[in-house]
Length: 203
Image 1 (cartoon, rainbow, N blue to C red):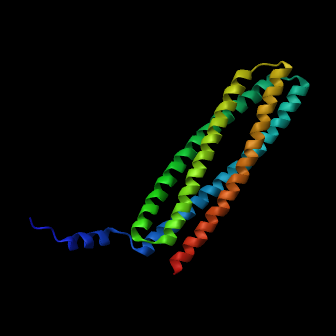
Image 2: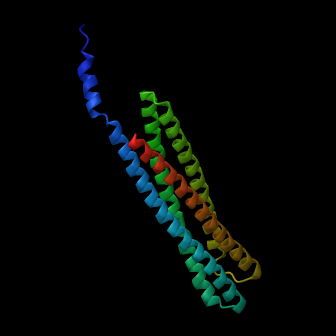
Image 3: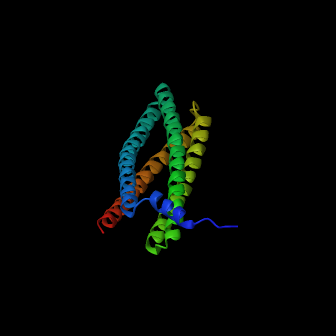
């Protein structure tokens, strides 16, 4: 049996493969999009932290005054906030999955091309993606637990229930503060990746 000439297939593959400059340009554009996403997340984190700290102060004041109607409105606000944060955490997990899939494909490509330096870079990004997904999964579980517990305490005014609700609000403040630190660190890492990819496009 006569074997097909592999040359046309090789030429077709070369034509369909992105040129090095095109691939680097795509990386820069991706980095810029990620940096924009980071900026938006940090701004959201700042608002969340201010909201949680204000909520805690208002909760304490309403509790001190035994203003149960106001406390009910504050509790409804807490549950709405937790539901929104849970939706945001699920969206973050979907984003993590997309980034991991993208970087896994990039790692395979660099290994096929034999570029060890770029393969190490892609492996580092993939490791970061997986670490981020684990963290976001833990945040989601924590939010679900807080939401379930707070809903079970809603409307209760005995001292034990009020103290448990106050402790949950304290957790929200800590989580908001941790999220802000984490996203600021992510923004710094994405800036570094953008600088590196910009240098690569100039070579």
